[in-house]
Length: 162
Image (cartoon, rainbow, N blue to C red):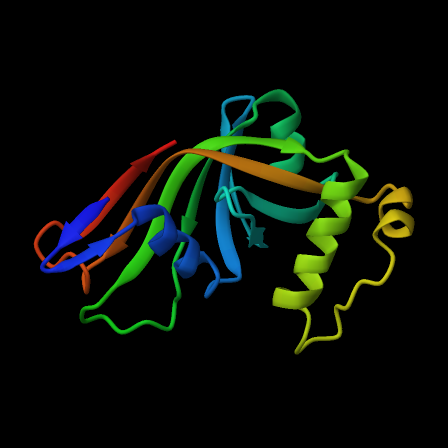
């Protein structure tokens, strides 16, 4: 529990709520002495795991085959330069999701959070994945650094070790 003023807050819940307001993250990978960063749409689960869909031939996905360590940054680029500023930096591991139930969950979340206002509605996750061009990846965070200058004007951020 983090204590700010007279308000007691659960950091995990604060991070969970913030993730629900965001859709795009930058994922950094490293393989063959080459760093790479990619922007991907994401959804999250109750344990703060992040999921994204990407084509297996993309640089970040190829890198994950040899080195599953990732760093992630999430921030709304439309936020003002003045406080409050919000954002997440984290590191953890990523792996392809092969369990059909997790895949179905991911597609349900994709359709709920990403696609309602776009032409990206996905109807049959099994058929889509069987095409072999894309995979779903799960990022399991080890450490999350959450910047929120509105909640923590002095410290500016809190860290959640998982």
